[in-house]
Each structure stands twice: as structure tokens, then as C-alpha cells.
Image (cartoon, rainbow, N blue to C red):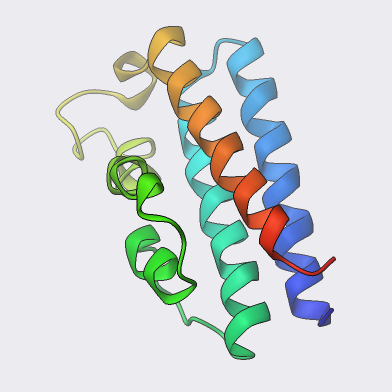
Length: 127
């Protein structure tokens, strides 16, 4: 496996651990952010493994998923997750301070779906 793939994949897995830690500490907005980051980095690892080139600076999870032929069952979740890298960081992105916009119920679903996406990626990537 290419070095770049390993690095993106290792960081994707670590970001998922960080997301779980944030959920446990009730930093729910941070959990959502790290879920988005984890899935994006996992998709980029798969993209690099498959295409043998960088996907560039895109943050579009749908674009990345399409390029790697991810099953369509993930697309609704990916559409919902894509904007989280902005919404979780800026008070003017969703008409409220990020830490007040998220709760345990919301991030539990985001975290579970993120785990499912990474499990699929891991099953496809040559480790």
C-alpha cells in the first residue's frame, strides 16, 4: 500500500476515535466535526488507493464516494455529513453557536453512520 494511503487511513481511524471521545465528553459539535473529518479522510485514502493520485482539496463526500464506487446506500448520509465541516465550526453557518446545535441523540446517529462508512472502506482497501 502506498504511504499516502496509509497516512490518510491512519488519520481517518484516529479522527473516529476522537469523535467517540468527544461524544463521551459531551462535546457533541466536535464529535460531528471529527466524524466528517474521519469519513472524508477515509474516502480520500480509498481514492488515492484506487486512482493512484490525490483527489485535491475537495470536501465533497459525494464526489469522493462516486469516484470510488461506494454503494449508493451511503449517499443520503454523506449528503447530510458533508456540510458538518463548516456547520460545526462557525457560529454564522447555521444560525447558532455550534456547541448549542448538537446533542447526544443527533451525534449518536452521525457516529454510527460514520463507523459504517469506514467499515465499508476498510473492507475495500488493501491493507
